[in-house]
Length: 173
Image 1 (cartoon, rainbow, N blue to C red):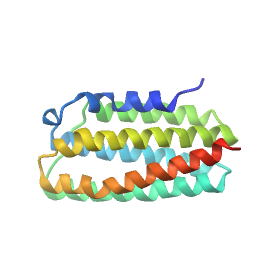
Image 2: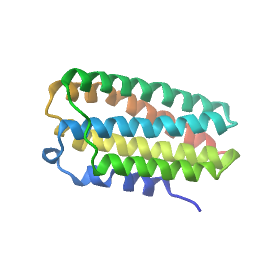
Image 3: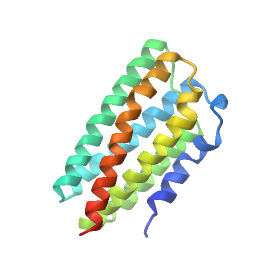
């Protein structure tokens, strides 16, 4: 069964995109950030283990390292602020979407795996950027949380561009 990465990403972020910035609180944002990063870490771990393409493995390692770093920063900040991440429809959707993506990827091998992983990374990072810009940054009430989101945004842009470049190189094979 083939999954369209754009459809998956749309399903993952539909609750965030539909919510206004005023409807989301810092505890929910914290949960969304940690969950979104963990979804990408999990996919990266699978790609690192399964891919036979050196560039895909390198990208997966970058995703693991970068998103682990963001989660450490987010966890340190919410601990400092005494904010308990609040599970919500978006974080639950991210988790279930991430699980579905892993299940779909586990059924693939070789070039098909690499393309599916990278296609999903392109769609996922675009969806994350849209959510960061339209909902998470505007919805953050705490200035330190907002500053963290603003600080990590350029990394997500770089990840998206890297994934698009990798996507184009895989498409020519």
